[in-house]
Image 1 (cartoon, one colour):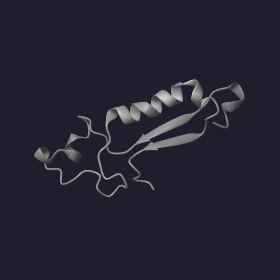
Image 2 (cartoon, one colour):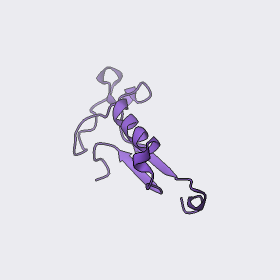
Image 3 (spheres, rainbow, N blue to C red):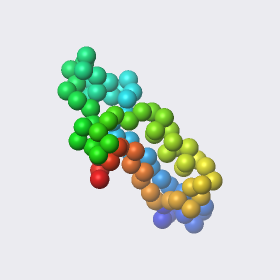
Image 4 (cartoon, helix red, strand yellow):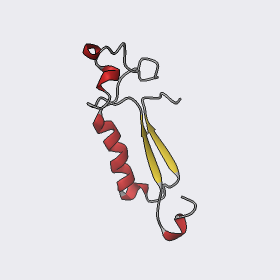
Length: 80
């Protein structure tokens, strides 16, 4: 962000937690041997893909025009 800001380029990151996708199925699907989901996180549930998409929509919109150098954790509070 520091290097590219002078050129008007914003650098941000989305850091998803446990999200209900095929890729992470072994971590949340009891039929695949998973023993839980995200119970340790404050929201105590698994995230949905549309919740990560919301962060992407924000970063792609004009609403984020003054946002740079940020990591947006979409993790149900796991990092809290």
